[in-house]
Image (tube, rainbow, N blue to C red; front, side):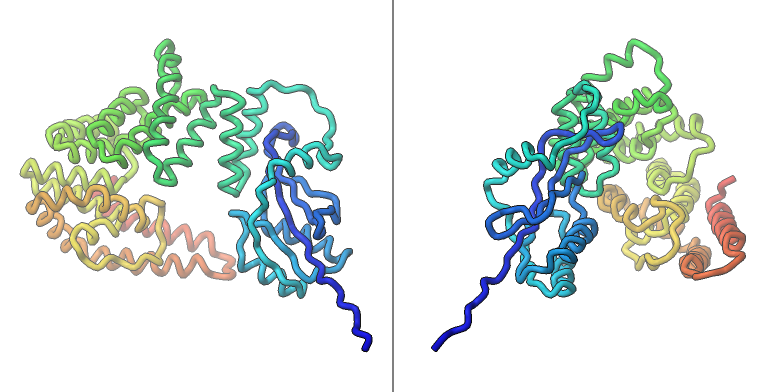
Amino acid sequence: MIQPLKNEPSVWSLCWVDLPEPLPVEDDYFLPTVVLLVGPRFEPLVSPEIVDELDQIAAEDWLSRHLDELGAPDELLVWKAAEWVAEDWKYFGRDWKTKVRLVAPPRHEAKLQEQIGGAGGMATSRVPEKSAAEISAGLMRNARRLRSPRKRRASVEKAIELDDCNFEAKIELADMEMATGQYARALVIFEDVDRDLSPVFRRRSPRWWDDEATRPLLRSLSGTMLCQWHLGRAPESAEIAQRLLQTDKSDHMGARFYLPLFLLLSGEAESASAFFRHYAKNYPDDIPNAWLSFAWGLVLCLEGDDQGARRKYRGGIFTNIYIAPRLLGERPPPEDIYHPTERDEPHSAAEFTGAFGGLWEREAAALRVLRDAYAEAAGALDELVERRTRMIDYMNQHYDPEYRAKWNLLVDEDERLVKEQTGAA
């Protein structure tokens, strides 16, 4: 009996390869990623696509255009990448009636890089020769546009490799390490930048922060301060904070909001008290900051000034409505309401209490004064929460010709209520 011939199922692969050498794009540079659609013997089915980062939406659009012309295979193997969302590839396969599987890229990627790098598809128009420092700077400019953390990091590391004096790139890399909790590694980078740049600015009188060349040094000092804190070294953090304030008296990095807390953690209550006398004299019209207000209230409690402490606590209570209930073990207000700034949000309260809440656990009197201040503020807090609940609801309005005027009125009323309760001018 004659059997019908069985057709082999078609299996294609969507591949990608990162190349190590930068390519120009306008006045900048990028590290290319090559995206390929290949057949079962790795034969290219279409011309490769050169991109600066993997983007799933763009990749699906590119693939869809070619599947429109070629038809869909029975199975599509997609090389795994941190940028891919596996569930979205399932939907893509459903739309194109093909089975999609994410697979690990093969180990011979280095050979592929070499082959693709020499392929005609990588040919680019000739551009004037650039120095390594110029290419490094161009990579950093382009890195700011990237959404992929993996590709952004690769671009930053390449920028440093090309120019060891690209301090902006070094600060960016240290920030990445800090964001992933690698504080010791970040600290090494921050301290290296400080060591290289500090002698440069000792010989002149720079305009701190206004002169962009000063920013890597200020950021390195701020990063060092925060890393030392996260590593449990409060005295070292306080020392760097004091240096920041002496260096940049306008304090563009916000060291003044941390210094008294670091001093309190170090057991230096008298130094924290001296700082607040300096602060009152030198920053009379400063922006409200809940962390600072709570630290000031604690210092006044330690000095026996309960009335002054209640005033400072009240300022902190209304600047971030989540800190006091966390310190007191009370139920916090709802989180799905309007927040004027990031400093007012629940995550700021969680960070504060997680790092500094123990200061209040040591001082029963300070906690008692805080509890009294919180009880006195209860009615006004309820009013504030109710208003901010209405504000977040109003932000979701679909259409209102008078939206801007009404919104500005709500914001003005919110600010007025907070100022009334905190005694701000």
